Image (cartoon, rainbow, N blue to C red; front, side, top):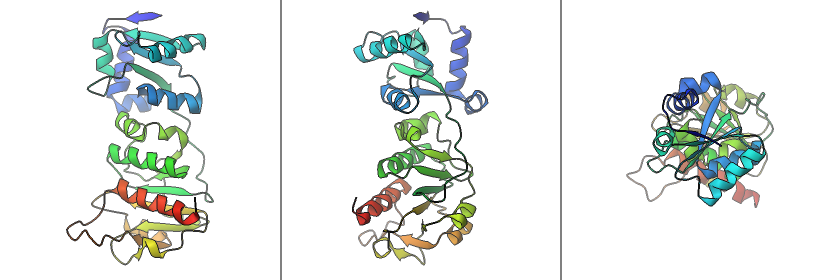
Length: 264
């Protein structure tokens, strides 16, 4: 198993660019997955990552040693990095000891207009986006459309927040949400504060359904609101001083209310 201790190593320089630069990740179509949970999520969806990096200190840990051994058996490039070098690739204060380098999954084809979908309009915060993707996967909404202006779903921060949900979903980036809603075969609901029906008064039983959520502050754009079949608000009788919920909380309430009404 190869050991790298020099910052001048060409492979390490490439990995560091991937860790620090969105442009490099986009150009090479590669991303870093840090931590055993993300590596496991990738493995479940796509098989053994082609490259595994472990820190010198962590290589003796049983779970990481097992990953390295399995990787070598299956032809992955397995490398041990000096602890200081591994820390330079890590995006956390306490590195998890294992990083996978993988190629971005191929972009899905045209969005399906007949399955439950989550539409996100201008959600720029990576943490919020990752939480929303995690909620969609948990609620069984397998398709997510992101408008122009949304955070990158495969950035390190979004991956950490999503905890691998990205690999369970069909994610369509830079999507035309209004055009999709116009062609959608089922019911579509956009969250809004004004001229909106209570979440608990609408019929969520018919399938499929598309839920639309916007960025905190600006909300869903008017052109997208107009394309949705119904505007919906979440009643907040005890929140006189609260203007709106965090978009992640709002989405969780609406998606799981959909499941509740359907009896799931």
